Image: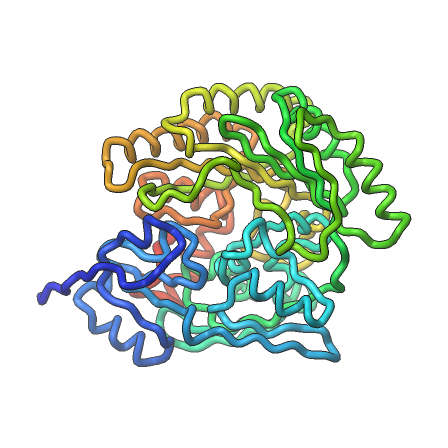
Length: 427
């Protein structure tokens, strides 16, 4: 069988792992010809990867085909009457937010405006999710191609009883099944956002988490912990009285220094959740593993002590552990989706980084990520597949933790709609 030639990735992607890959080639249009080409490819057993934002470590990879949606799928249109937005798969979340702002509407984007359609399709956890629900909960219609090349166009069911297996599968697991090209989404009225930011000590972080677990759904708490701890709380303001309530809650939070409470117009105006003094290093690679679990309650100090011990042995200063708060409307099961960890209150994620192309440091960092996971699994038994890892030994475990009892049926749906496994594996 003829061996296909690999090429240096010609795309400019935000994730350095993906940027540094040697790929089989790039497609920029999704149609029947694409699937026919892949069907005839000697490497049809190798899945192809889809890049809409280019922020994940699997936006491109060695010896893989890449479908780049960022050039030809950039359209956004707004229904003035129904207040719905049609968005194609090459639009990133920051651009969507800016577009909706012109119509005085908003959508619950995540902590970064740089993410693409994958943010929505893998669940979509936002600082506004507690009052809005997950990003997948906003989907009204979904269009694209299954891995077998057949087109699909599905509409949101009216009730949980009317939910089809295909709808449930695509909302949260579409990246394993096909290529989504367009979504119709619900939008919400644009409201001002209160932002609280501060540096915290260990004990202050514990107290902040304790307070946040009893907050109303309109307020959420996020933090990042490397050498120091940086945190911010975000609340959507409904009216003047509500703003006073939120400010009262925010002023009760402890802090070490650099506390700032301000009011901004939209999510794009929020400060980034980062280690602060770390600049983007184009010579580094990284992997991110997102966990999901219930409220920490009496386990609060125990969990934070475990995290501190893990951070004390991190391979380098670019490694960190952070977390987002869920709850409220994210716990809704009105419509079935593949995001089955609906009871989650916290999403801690582990970021492991290493010097690019240094295999010994990569191995050490991946071992640290697994150690973090093993130590936190008792309180965070679920996984959020915002990034997937079919190239790593823990892929089967993360699938089981992400989809639980739903996984076998999901695998059946994949076998039917992606029989040649052109999309990333579900095993």
